[in-house]
Image 1 (cartoon, rainbow, N blue to C red):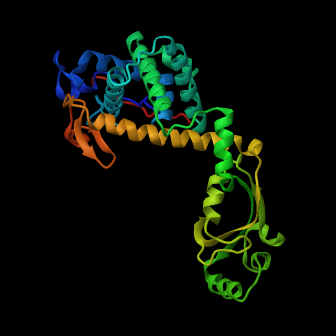
Image 2 (image 1 turned 90 degrees about the horizontal axis):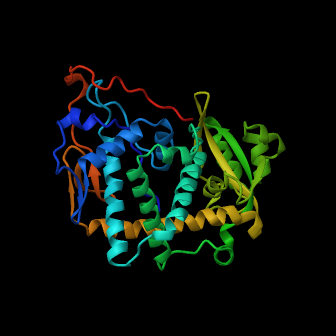
Image 3 (image 1 turned 45 degrees about the vertical axis):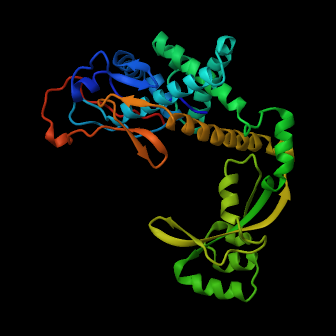
Length: 360
C-alpha cells in the first residue's frame, strides 16, 4: 500500500497564508495528534531536499504550482501531505487496537521496503533523482523518518492480513498465472494508418472480405503497409503489452476493427486500425514480471479499500491552514484551503520565488 505522499511546499507557507500556528493546531485522528510543529518540520524537510522531493513526487504525484504571491507555494502540497498523514495515523491506531500489532523487529524490513518502493516509483516515472532513496530518507528529520518507516510497517502488516491479499511467493504467483493463463499471451499485430478521405473505401473493401494484409497494402500510409501491415509481436514482458491488449480487445484474430481509433501526426489526423494476427500462450517465465505486477496491483486495490474504510470511520480534525476534511469522489480527504488569487497579493517576498523542479 502506498502511504508516502508528495509535498513540495515550504515550511513557512502556512504562516504566510494564515498566520502562526497555535500550540493545538495540526492534525487530530481519534485523539492522536500531529502538532503544527511536527507538520511544519516535515514540510520543511521536504522543501529543503531536492532528493526527497523527487522520490516523493514519483510515489504520489500532484500539482504543486505557485501560490498567491512570490512568498508562497501551492496549498495543495500541504493538503496532500496532511491527507496521507491522516491515513497513516488511522491505520496505525487500527493495527494497534484491532490487530494488536507492534512493528518491533519488522522496522528494518519496512525501511528496506520503503526505499525499494521509492526507487521503483522513480524508475517507473523515468525520474532522475539526485542521490538514492536512502539519501531521501536521510534528509528527513529523525522523528519524520521513524514515522514513515513505522507507517510502512503498519501498511505491510495490514496488507498481509487481508483475505484478499495474494502472497508474493513463487507458488502463489504460479497459481495466479495458472488461473489467468488467457491474460498472458504473445500477441502479433498488424496496423493500417489510413487517410480520413479513404476510410469509406477501406470499410467497403473490408466488408467485401479483404484480408488484413491486403487492406494494409492498399490503404495504409505506415511503412509497415508494404509488408501487409505486420508491425511486431508483444509478450507479457513488453512495456507495451497492456496497450496492445487494449487495442485488440474484443476483436477476432485476423480482422481489423470496423471502427478505428484516430491519431494525429504532423498536424494531420488519420484513422488507425490495429489487428491481432496471432495469439499464442506465453510461458510463466516470460510472464513472471507481468504476473507480479498484476498481483501487486490487486493487493494494492484490496488494501486501498480497507484503508478507505478505516479512514472513513475515524474522527478527524484538520487545522484550517492545512485544508478541509471533506467528502470527495474517492471518499473523505483533505481539500486544499482557498487562497487569494496571485493577482490580489502584493506583499513582500518571504521565501523567494519558487522554481519548478524538473526530474525527467
